[in-house]
Image (cartoon, rainbow over all chains, first blue to last red; front, side, top):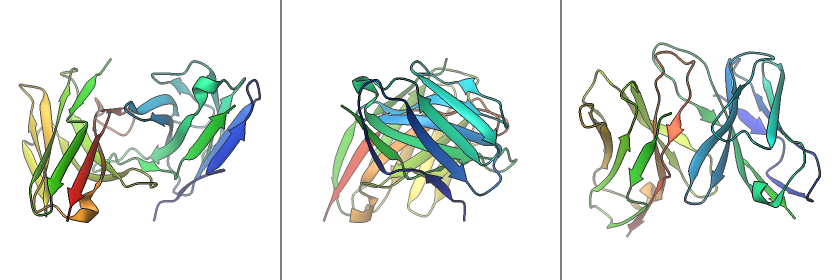
Length: 114
Length: 114
């Protein structure tokens, strides 16, 4: 079974704080993704990575950065948290394969910025 | 970039009825179309997917159809059950390998009443 875990289920931070969200997968997947999920807006891609130390911007990268120092770990960083970054954050991973492009999601981190 | 529209945003049916959720996409190069189900408080999970060289795919009570000419695809659930209640997301991708990203629709909340 693929397992994708996220460091926290719930997080409360103050405006201006630096926030780290961690994601770990145990299936040796090459590709990892960070999404945010907001009611009525679906899943929006923030950043993704196809390899260690590699990162690409998604659709809404402003205010975020990422780090991938090891294959199994992909971190999302909010340099200076703002209230409009209050959201559910979902990590996902997948591996390039002929027969399936399934993305496996973590349980999510609900971040509240006050 | 790709744009995926999903309708309806909410759908209420009686147990045993059929449910249909429709999506349209904008990028004619998209060739992979998955559907994810997210139960309340849970992570999204892939339930079915279809590639552009196939017009229809079935898996027990769920089926997906694809019309490449019209650039739309649909999820069909027959004999709905209360456990089908969830948010369903369609997505589209240009990937011909795992090195690609998904663009998600905004989601449909399906409520199945006993």
